[in-house]
Image (cartoon, rainbow, N blue to C red; front, side, top):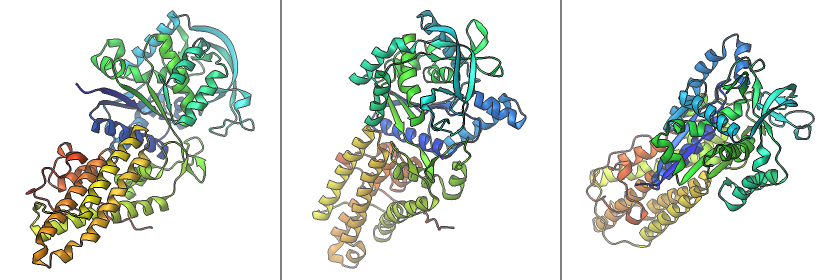
Length: 514
């Protein structure tokens, strides 16, 4: 049986429609999940919506509707975004309606309480509603939240606290041993430094009054609801039905070779410190990896529903197409540091790489095979240096892209795949089939050229499946194969001779700047 892997996005607040940062994380995590599956793993890919937050309540109040009406309406936009970006989820969990989530959040609370890790005390602190997080004065920038640039509220109330301080040594050991891996290393260093500097206990509930009665009640105390993050983090195990002792929980969490969370840098502490400590307290297994991405910015500023500088992914997809948006996010932006978005760069990158590069290559390969051999892939004869160079580049591109994805670097993986796009286009120019077709004595060389050309483009379709799944499938099927039947680089010339190909559709039509 194949090794199992679990991978998740964070679950975003649904106080407004999604922005491009959400599309980035969805596309990233989907490419990782599809890549793991391409390497033979059995993958469970999870996303969902964080609905029990004060942000959602306040947004609903501002609109004059109930929190239930707001989250039920807005969650649809996130589900539609996932679908339009070709994101293939096993489950989309909603924290305000899914019984698995409510049951799991309550059970983890009870386990932490039974361990002696929960206590109540009066508390006063600076609270940012945008982050749903308390800040110390030292963490503020000019007295404002470093994420949303708003002045936090001074909140005084009696809350329940989690004894995070009990888990400092265990967390440090897990981070330093690699039992809990944080990617990239710069984020690991930040987390390790934070833990080493000393952990303070954290507030894990809010008064029912301040929460407007919205949220999961604290077991045994109807005057408090669970703090949204403490509730939300448990979705990762809850979605697998752990309180029901579900088979999926055993396979994809307890026995999984990988348990991976893909998160934005602003929530690293929650996923790499608080959540593992909660799991330790509850007696459950920790994630194996927390992969931390940077932000997509506009004019250097983080995209945020709070600040209002959002870029609507639905609008981009409608105007430029899913392939253009998804490719730009994965090929242009580093998985680990911030990157600035502009439509001009999206158009330029799409036209250069997809329309002029891969799309033109597919069109050349199929049209020449149809024109010169009636669409039937001919058998090859003798090969020369151009064919050997093409084979070498295929091997290099596959090995380098697989290695890059092992390190969660989708941009590097695509760059190495595009080495093969360029090498294959160069191969066509070197062999010049249009000249070979005019000389009967070069018929066997033309056969070899078309055979190797189709083989290389078929491999490109296969390699692209984690990144552009629908386009990759179209390429492979246009060349007479099924996506799950294309052999790897070691057998890349197999099952080609005699196969019928069709003229390629305009897979990546050029985008003209407005």
